[in-house]
Image (cartoon, rainbow, N blue to C red; front, side):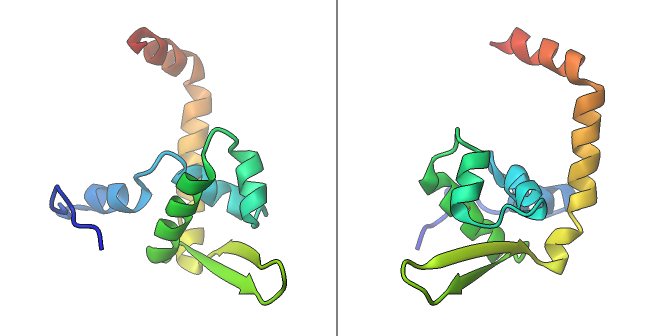
Length: 117
């Protein structure tokens, strides 16, 4: 079992959100699962920059936090599908709002992000 170097800080809602959604691909995984991309290979194709290992880890974390559920079908080779839980579905409007804000401010965001590089 992995021990944390930095203790959990869960003093407010933002801390809780950060703990559950921290990870480069988690928001995209939730969004794509909501759009119907349920198999690991489909998710890998939608997020080609992510390694299989990292996607697997982040999917497991989302499952641990009860945002997605995993179904393993008893076939050879094994077939796995992910779906949003009711709890996970409550995040979709929040993710959509964040995406809309990013779209509305795309030019400004690109400008400030490229200044950092």
